[in-house]
Image 1: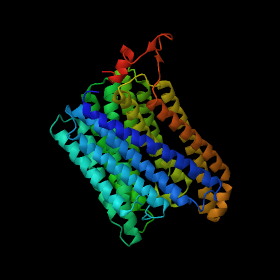
Image 2 (image 1 turned 120 degrees about the vertical axis):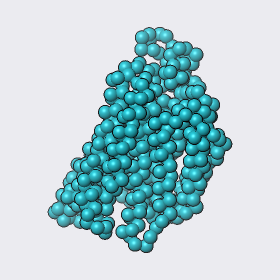
Image 3 (image 1 turned 90 degrees about the vertical axis):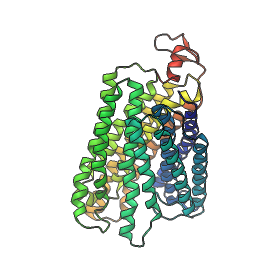
Image 4 (image 1 turned 180 degrees about the vertical axis):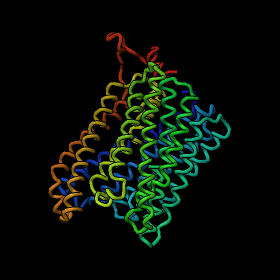
Length: 461
């Protein structure tokens, strides 16, 4: 760690990990309600549980992005963060807003729009926090060195924050409501967040592989160009059946098929950088999470998204468990695993102590990835049966749901594996080991002052 102001990222990462734990536990509870529908039905209805699960996901991912920016930008810009105090104020606003939203949801106070259920005062707080963040990072970048990584990261975060303004617009017309609603939801996860993902992945590859910056930057520009070209008009695949003009069926189908390209490029980019760099970086866990993120994102967002993005297929499959399968694997690969990768890379340096448990950390990767992959396959099979029985044969919704119980039981087991993996991940980063053994010598401990430990603490530089 080169700059003292980077330490502010640690507070963001810890807050994000806390919400991460809440999010996966909420998901596990929601999964059990699919198996036993009346569980907690009066105390904590399913719609509230789902609300807490999805909102916690969005907020902790954003906290991770903000923390990553505060860690990456000083190093890339070669200067301290403009104002550490503002960064902490921003974090306090976000945490208070999150807690306020949780209490509001439990009390039944919400706006009812999926992902945008926050009460107005919470939305305003998020906007204020975003403005503080944009001012802080923009001043840092403007006064320092400009790189492709910082440029793409700042553009992505600016666009992300500005698109949040559409969360305040809630027209009475339901078609218009859903059209502008997707301006936030789709253009975040399949637009601006892809820029954030590309920039963070580029930074990690730069540090973990040792490949020349010029090579990485060329890849980043190509990835970003394809992401924006396909993602913006790819919004049309949400417009098929909400009352908008029919031409969106063709626009959405064509550009949505192209959305596979940036994720394929990010996966290829990651493996090519590792192959070209051939650098034996000591932080193996961060490299595993980085490669895993790009790979799972390609399959979850790319392949599984393509499976039902054409309007002729989507006519039958939309709103089924196929959508849930795609959503879970895409979010896990593209953004959850990416955040966990940057946490794994940065936190040993931010904490200033080593060793940390890389073996446990990598074990958590395989447990979470395996659980999420199994969950995706289970939901895909469930969604295929649901599509046929409900949309083709014409059985009623509840009768079909009863026939999917065995899949929901398997989904709950997969969710339990993800939760265990998440808790192991948090433990591996926050609880230090007393000693760590090298691969070459089982009797030689790597302590905080040893060369091996120092290499991890310095990011392998």
